[in-house]
Image (cartoon, one colour):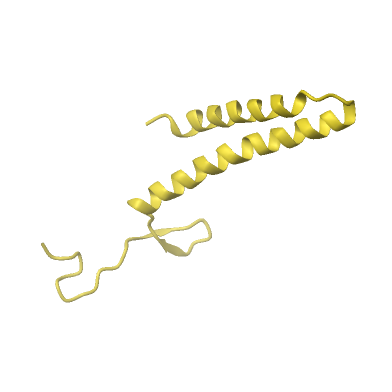
Length: 90
């Protein structure tokens, strides 16, 4: 089976237009899966960290000790929900 440009021509990735009008190589295969995995990991880390920080600040302001764990758990639940809504559908 020969490559798209012929057996002697080096293979080049298909180029797709970007929003600014230039052409960039299309992301396919493992690169797309890696980008998806990185996005999911970012959501799973940012949700509990962000809401945990908010809970910690509120604990310090109000003088309680339960908002930090509530914020971490709420952040994890919300991040999983966002992942499910964004990536869980075919």
